[in-house]
Length: 345
Image 1 (cartoon, rainbow, N blue to C red):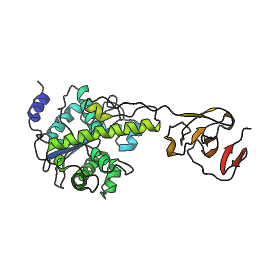
Image 2: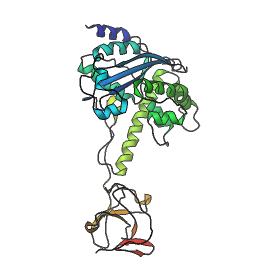
Image 3: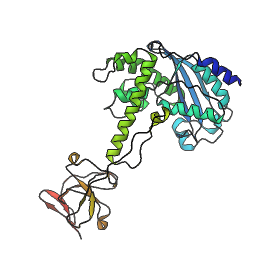
Image 4: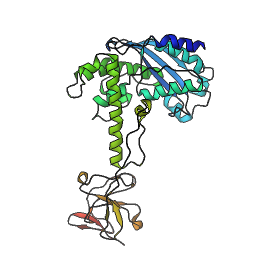
């Protein structure tokens, strides 16, 4: 048994019990910066941990360190977090960092914004270096943000903090942990209990186990709803569902509906009941856009014309994504019953 394994065994018993009161529970807020987004190919280049107690407003730095990833950092990634190959050249490698991280999380509930990513990166690094990471559950404030801000645009850490007047600029691992800590401590848990429309039953906020159970169910439902929405919107490939993967739950069914078809009454060509800003067909429910359909004529490849089921043009747009209105007719077109109609040349 290695020193790390002995530490792991000793620390496992010190994690917060599911019966522990959520308020006052000690947490370790974690954030990692990486060489990329895929845990299989990417490596951690920086990690930071901040300590706090749920229900309090104070944050304490527990650790912050660069990590030698053992591979070059892509230039485009450096442009995001600012960490270069030269900075990590003499930094410790993961086995040394893992021991410090385990100590920093000992007796505390780990927290991370978009926890499946940070958790996945930590576990992947452990597997590569034969360093086992404990099967601790993590609190993910992103799940609460998606619940509370369901109808708000943008669910990123920056968007969520700015909406709540938290002015700390998230940048790098330490900046992100501080922003996540302030968001969780000063806003989210209070909003979950008091929000006029989006609050959750108070029993979910009493114990660690009750909150984690609510978080798990909410995260799975959020991914289910997103999958259903994207399928109906015509997306070809299913989205990632990291919570389903993390919880070993089968991914949501992915069955995009077959688009309805119609025929252009001018040329007889088949057309899709759809409209798109990219020029690609995206099926829509007919009542959403008065049964508009797209049709691209080969002799007019620049333009996508929006036909109705009667063959009358109700609008048009270009591959650049600019959606036009109904204005003056252009060359090769004429106005029919107040609508634009394509005229074949």
